[in-house]
Length: 236
Image (tube, rainbow, N blue to C red):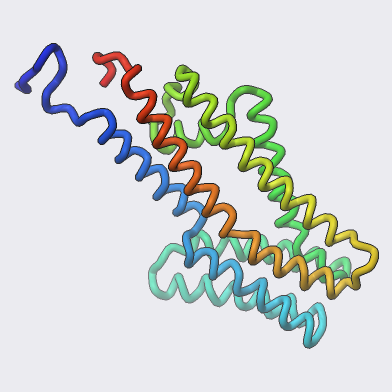
């Protein structure tokens, strides 16, 4: 039987320590979804191969090389009995882009799936803010809080997850606007558009989202600490 002091279980961990463990788990799992540094590299190599081959050769060989490199990364991972989830996700996107570019004969079309996905993510996050169910809060609930509704009952957490979701949405939508501006630029050749979009795909891929993740973890940790004293003793 555990000892109690003032009606509180003395064996229970302090709320701030529990929150530290929760937020660390949140950051690790979200970072895992993004693929980490290795995921960034593996997703960038096929794109870089496409850009280089398209510049020095032509579209169809560039598409074949990009798909082959993506497939080789997946096979290498599988041969080492490592997770191939991120490699397969990247290969799926590359494959769709390759098909579209092959059919249209325009190299910049290789990047259309990525633009569409970013648009979908941005709009979904914006819509969740309008519905007062910001997606960042919902993801935190699933990953950290066992699907609970604590974040919706705490005004501070709602505000925090609201502006974080708005920031994520703005990042996705700005990336879409810039990408479409390049895609439809009248003064650029198709090869120039493809090269610029490839560079943007690499530089505006993982790095901005890594910064957003760091900000999300920091803001969530800060708000959890501020909210901890407001949690009733019997719920600790």
